[in-house]
Length: 149
Image: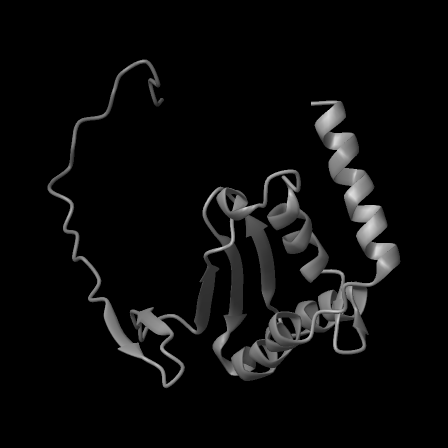
């Protein structure tokens, strides 16, 4: 029987190989950093936009958070639900967050569906809807959260 009160002793050294980070710059001056793992059939992309709360104008605190939540509400004629459903069918996961320094758009996708998933997040980045009703709903949620936190 296993005695959980006794700490197990090490079985040997852990061999850690730091991944090689490669980089290149696109024609639009966007820096791309990546590492490739041939053994995994997935692709993860993280887009960091310097637009966190430290950039919010005085008197408009919460603007970056509000903007990041609105990005998931719809784009290029698709509702947020439609985008979410399409990504789910592709086996992809989208996460959009905003913190102090950055708004981050993360996509985890099966390699075979990466191009289709990337097309969807491109719509979110390039053609967000920012509908008035979504704006008012998300704004109220943030105000309510601030009042009750």
